[in-house]
Each structure stands twice: as C-alpha cells, then as structure tokens.
Length: 378
Image (cartoon, rainbow, N blue to C red; front, side, top):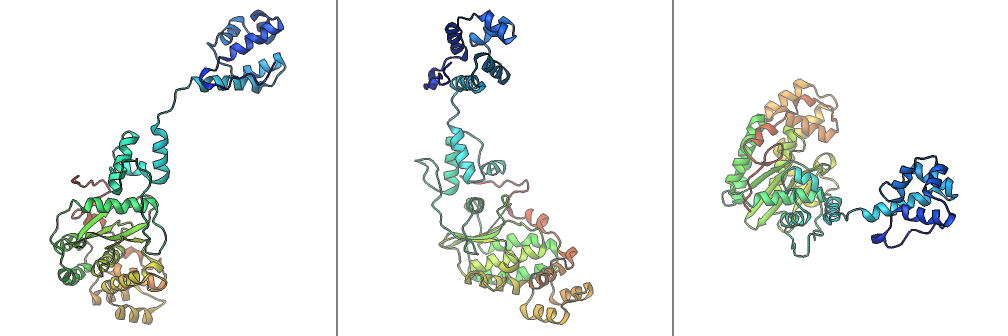
C-alpha cells in the first residue's frame, strides 16, 4: 500500500474507505475477508468503506496491522477527510483574535465600553473610542505617549485614558478658571479632616471648570490618574481609585490638580502609574512629576511639619503621637500615616487609619465602574 495516497486538493478529498476498497481489489479480498481479518462484524467494515463511519484511532491501528503499514496512514486519511468536510471558520475569528491580542477587548465589553457584536462593528467601535480612521479597518493606534516614568503606555492603560476622554467630552462644567482652581485648593484642604468630605471634591472642581472622571482600572493597568485637555480651555482629571485609601485619594487628586495648574498634558496626556513609593517622591522622576509630587505632599501635610515630626519620632511612631500631630495639622490621621509610610517605607505602620473613601466619592462624581455606567452623548 502506498502511504502517500492522500490527495493534495483538500476540497476534494475522498473518504478513507475509497483507499481501503482500492487495496482490497489489489489484494483480491472481499469485505467479508477484511471483516474476518479484523475480527469485526461485516456491517462495521461496510460503514467504513461507504464513508458512513470514520476511522477511530483503535481502528487505524487494527487496519495498520492488517495491511502492514503504519497506523498513521489511516489516521491521516481520516484527518484529511474530516478537515476537508469541516466548514470554513467565521472570518471574524481572526479579526477578534487580533483585537484581543492587542487590547483587553473582552474586559472592555464586560465593562460596557464596547458592544459585543460582529467583528466589523467591533472594529468600528474601537476606532471610535480611540479616535482613529476606520475606513481601512481598525489595526493599531498611532500613539506614542509615555507614562510618568518615561516607559511606554500599555494597551490597557491607553484604553483607560481614552475612556476618560470619551466620558469627559459629554460632561458640562463651569468655564475653566485657573484663579478659581488656585482658590479652591484651600477649600479642598479643609475636607481632609473627615473621610466623608471627599464627596465634595468633584463638585468643587466642576465649579472651577475641571472635568473629574473616575474610571475603574482595567486589569493589570496599575494606573492611578491622568491629566489631559480636550482643548486649551477644557482640562480633564482622570482617577482610578485603584487604592481605596484616604491618603492615596487626596495625594493623587492634588497631584493631578497641579498638572492642570502647570498646564501639563495639553499636547500629550500625562499618565500616572503606580503613584506611590519612589514615584511619589522627588528623586529620579521627571520634572513635571517632581513638581506635582511636591505640591501633593505639601497639600496633604506641610513639608516642614512632617519632616520635623519624622525627625523627632523616627523610628518609634506611637499611635498617640500620630493622632496628636494629625489634630494639630488638621488632617485625618490616615493622611499623616500615608505620608510617614511613603517617607520611611514603614508600610505596616498604623494601617487601620488608612480608611476607605471610594464609597463617598462615587456617589457624587461621574463614574465608570463598580456597577456605575455613565451616560455618554455620541
């Protein structure tokens, strides 16, 4: 028997039984003879020869013994026949695979950013979200932004930023006033004493012309915030509230406010990732991040005050001393604890004071995530 008998034209591959019948004729065997040799009922042999039953792996081995060839020959005959009969896959499979391999499409659908539809419409939605021409189909985004640490923006981070922009474009706030934003900083700082007062921040910023958008972080994006401008008069702050802690909320918010005041992000979005530890300091960070970090830290606890307190108490920070210091500088103890942790890397220090504020902020802000779905005007 020739083991290369399978036809090359996959669109016209005969059933394996065709080759078996040819071999039976060459050997002068009948179907009954083959059934006897195989130890199989004649009806079973007839079903294989007529193409009504496929060749199982066990039968491939048995036929190989009968005809003294490799079982792979019969297995390959069956495989070629099955592949020839299989329907052509949906062309959208490859297009969806290409999208999913580059962007977190499934998660974006789950979050309601995209509608789960056919591949062509899905590509059109992606093009609309990322503001690119879709006439040639969505392929990739011509985007060269860097994060605050000068590394490339990941697809998940990029999707998050464009979602912030998309929501911000539908928001209505007061005209932007830099002087009003400067004046609002002291008003915002008065809120630092009580976690529930964080809910007032979105409204205060809206009165200054700031579009504050809170979008839940996509998986593995690790993004904390962003500053961008829709045009020269419409600044946007995006927050992810990735860490639900009072200290992190106020530090990141004030950090992004400083970006707005410095007019950072007008030509290219400022994207802040893992804004903690070294990235929240003043060494080995880009100049614009250093400026924003200094402003945020000073806002939370004045530099002179916190430096003096740490110098006097380090490494023994008693709960009583921290509470007394917090009362004196008029901020919640969690904000003081967060600053001490960041400066000393004592991440286990008095963690019980790092209270949650997300529940208060979400009720008063424009939010996408945690079960909230913003209304977006197309």
